[in-house]
Image (tube, rainbow, N blue to C red; front, side):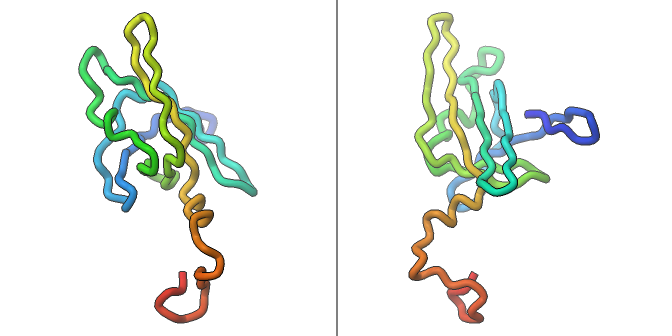
Length: 125
């Protein structure tokens, strides 16, 4: 993935993590990654990951599952909210495509009646 900064594209590493923010490892085999930042909405990261990298199986490919998380240093955390789609092409290429949403999407999972913010107690965010 490339991040444009000061009119130059520079590559960024994407790390795969378990749902509790424990980094499993570097996501290898990334064929493409597109970050869509939004001012008033949740950021999206669209990713295509190849099963094989130079005919060697990708280490993290089988761990790319729903609710796994991604971390991009200097950018932030993302969560895969839907099952990744696996595609088998006739030329032998196998890859997964998925969209991960910015970590603020976890607030959609919070029950508003039990969500406490700035109340000073232990349950408060």
